[in-house]
Image 1 (spheres, rainbow, N blue to C red):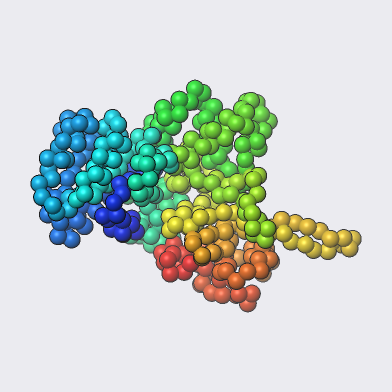
Image 2 (tube, helix red, strand yellow):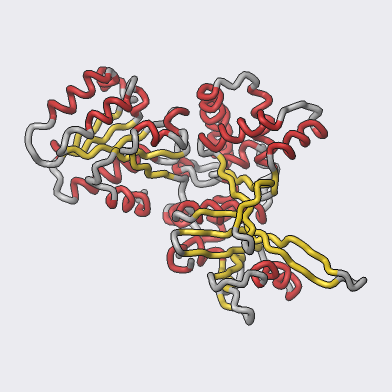
Length: 413
């Protein structure tokens, strides 16, 4: 299937003098993007096939090029003229000291290098620092809903139920039964993601970390922090886990791109509040599989999908809070903190977003938009709802249909 958003990113970064590093969650399609979609684009753009140097380093037939000296020599020998050569390396972590080899390619003026990798070290968010400021990251996510819908045989409501249940890992599209999808997700979570995290970070207590994964998966969209999670383990599971250990485990999960966090932001005070945060799984299917598909709450999963869609299109996403002051029945001032689900920033652009499964009554509408109306600036404010026609209400709030957002995201925000 096509992934035009990411292909366009690669095209925009061509020949910029940097190493293009495709990162992302395991099994989200990094190799396919580079070796199928981008390779095809190069050919269609008139690049001669012998000027595209492709090596899949996980292929046994290419095992000799896992030697860094042989890899460098092979590439150098393939360059026989002054025209541009494109170097595409898949699973580059098979090469010891691959950073030095890739930095060596930067000194060959007529080359442009692209790499992917899939072990825990390469999945880390900080891999780009290995290239001494000469690396350019393209972060790939599982299929967005519109990408999923493009390959789904059915209507958008059926696609939505499949998407929030099994997620957007591309391989799932070829699976026929729910049992096959379930087995696949549970298997790769245990044997791939957890194993990578443990191996990379030398985790000594696997069961302890897995317990934390379960707790985080159960509380998506809820405020938490290491201290609160530590207290949860002590009170519910009768397990002593120091907050510093909890923080380390959360960092490991973020580094592997399994989860992302949204920080709490005081909209009026224009500052971050270093207390609770919200954590969201990068893929709903992996989260659900981890919980044996026991907690399929559409409200929280919809919020999670919206968060991931916003991150995909480049927004920095926080959880907003605004102060609400009212007069109580006793005549005294009552101060409350109201939450805004998402405060989204991209350059000079900002959008405030509430996620609501439905607005079933005027009271529910008032509840959802109350925090938005407390924000005094002129940036866009919207409530995304699953059903209904997109429209502006009398208070100037855009009530946006979920599928209008998911299918036409760039046009509506």
